[in-house]
Amino acid sequence: MLIPIQHENMTARRWPVITFGLILVNLLIFVATHRRVNEQDSKLGTVREHILMLAATYPQLTLSPQVEEWVTDFRNQYPDDWAEIQDANYEATDDWETRIRQVDDTAALQIEMDSLAGQYSELMASSIKQRYAFIPAHPRPIAYVTSNFLHGGWWHLIWNMWFLWLAGFVLEDAWGRPIYLLTYLIAGAASCQFDFWANPGSILRSVGASGAIAGLMGAFLVRFPKIKIQMMWFFDLGVFRFWRFWLRAYWLLPLWVTMEIYYGTGPRDGIGHWAHVGGFLFGSMAAVALHYSGLEHQANKAIERKVAWTPEPEISQAHGLMDQGRLPEAIAILSEFLVHTPESFAAWNLLRAIHWRASDVPAYREATCRLCELHVKAREYDTAWQDYEDFLKAGGEKVPPDIWLDLCRVPEQHHDFERALIEYEKLAAAYPMERPSLVAQLGAARICLNHLNRPDEALRLYQAASGSSVPHLDLERYIRAGTQDAEKVLSQRKALSAQTCSTER
Image (cartoon, rainbow, N blue to C red):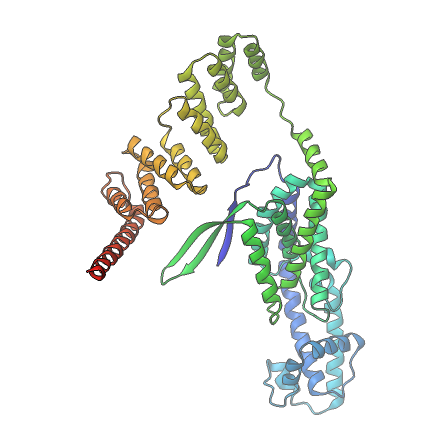
């Protein structure tokens, strides 16, 4: 099973109010209706089964218009099931059917059918799903919206809301709240319409936000095609395991919609695959239209005006003093400000610039290191890496081990494995008694084995990690596995070398 965990752009300029609101509305509607819907579905399902059994077994009975419509729809869409019910050897499913099969009086059977018709009419009138779910054979205008806020169970809800969060909040930040909400609602309606075109005679009741969310996924692909999405793959090899990996949106999302098309062409499995496809296509086209119409650009400008940053008075004052050349006074003001606001990016950035102008290289390095730490904590890893490069150019040698470990992963993610190896080895040498040093050794070993084709060096690093005095019981399994893999590669090389020498002789 594959589950998306996160993507690279997990930040926004302001609170995603609409996304939070949609999640909350879906949750409240589910909590308010779930028990009642289950009870209604159970009663209605039983009545429908009994009506089908009577209508199929005793075709001479008179049906009410509403019941006749249901029976006709069922017979047309499920002819094999209808033939099975008509079969004299059809096994009764409950005591009621067993009792009815023993009745020979047509008048009594008609009374029973009329009673079921009355129950059916009442249940249909009060059924939440029947009124608000989308039924392709009998589409109701209101259902194009309401069906997107009903869910069949807790897992159905949780799964959809997680996808809504991952795809939604960044689109809300890019488009603005009104455009985002309108696109979401129209995508839900479009997915219903596509389901109608694909299955016009279906009597299955379609519920869930997945069609609208598929629209957001299509828009996400168009708007952020190169973003990496982290996936977790759960699998069972005797022992339950998982594997995490990154895929760019332009690989993952087209693959997903292709699978939806494939499953949609097969037998119906209770999942609205064509609704997903329809929502995805609409979302993709909407994103293209918003881009080329200029609406996205206008919305983005409006957001920027609302979230435009106004510097703190102390920062403005220090900036003015720096322009006047009064650097010690500016440093004093910023230092005092940072005592009370130690995580101000603007203050540290300005302080670094002032130290550089004052030719105070050690202070410049210290401010740069602090700024690097803040960017790492904010998960702005590329910016943190630039800070780190500036730190090294100014003669810096090492940063705190936890921060350094996160920085080591930046070149690795950019496939600059030689640089990543250098940084991992520098960290391991700088803090030999710290936990990040041990993790860095394993990172270096992994790169040597999997990317740089240096199994001998990988084996040395794994063996060094195994003998480390840093507690590593939780990592022992990974160390053993890495050691075995490195030894296996070296053994294969030796065997190949021996075979080559023998052939040459």
